[in-house]
Length: 456
Ligand code: MN
Image 1 (cartoon, rainbow, N blue to C red):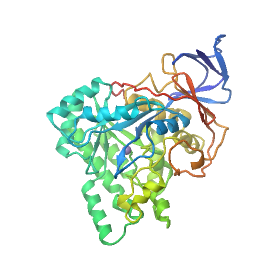
Image 2 (image 1 turned 135 degrees about the vertical axis):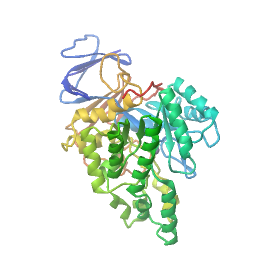
Image 3 (image 1 turned 45 degrees about the vertical axis):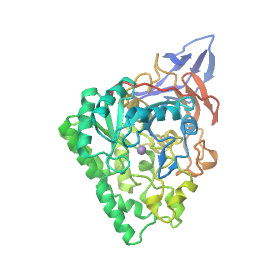
């Protein structure tokens, strides 16, 4: 089966080029001007931007948190991803405490295999250290699981500093890379205990118990350990200006540091927690919390300057009914926001159309950056001969309004309710098949994507 996308503008991280794209089977076979293929079905893409399928390097599908399970699994979350142009997600597999990594991986495979609507890979969580875990890291690398996650907060998952250091050394040996959730757990607990004593248990206390300084402190802490171990690391969901300053300091010392941020840190403000309607405010509880306007502006500036390598969603969705578990105590609100469906259109609208970044920047942040960071370039992340035919057809003139009533995410709200977009994703090809056409999901069927070493 051949498909010819004719007359569009192909976007890469280097720029935009008017070109036709020929798809044969699951791959792109040619990109160029005036390609003729008489046996291909032709699609007119005049006036459209053709992006490589977006890659979301940070999702949580089918995850148990606070005694409940995220509203989206690999089927619903994958459909929502596709609808928004994301053709590949990298989700976080995790062993329970004391379990082997293989055990955790088997569980995540079961959640995804035959169910995932879009292509997927896994990061593996390291929450413990032993000879066994050390050996298993090599086994994970061989299976194409080449990125790992460590937590400096959350008692159920956090790892001690000594063990984190040991893990970093082992990853250096193997060529794996770790993404780390940086927040100072001990002081967050102290601030939370104080809030409880004073009866301040509404969502307004959430950002006050997790201030930016405690993120920056943990970033600095991690980066000093990484300096000692002489390894690159990824700061996931970086949200604060002060954290960026710590990253800059480490880079000035000669360290390699990769940074991910998320749409909600680029687009929302701390005031969302001050909504007098408790459950409205509860919808925005996530960690790190939504920050101040100055943080937001610093993040945009860092996107523009190339200091941030990728924008991922940290999609971790709960319905308002699930969030209600914390209706008298903000610490019991399951943390996380839905977002996997709207990342592309939001970055285009608030980034490209607003003149803050170029289409090439957007491609770098959603496609090429994560593909290289997570070792699946050039299979993913570029529209080029030989690459998977994951293609997003973006129509800059097809404006829409984001609403919960029109989303595939399995939740009853979106943080961006009523937002007017500039343009929209009109077609999405997943490995050559038309998966989405004007909001209708036509085809699903994701594959596990084994990945190689970090290419940045
Ligand atoms: Mn996360």
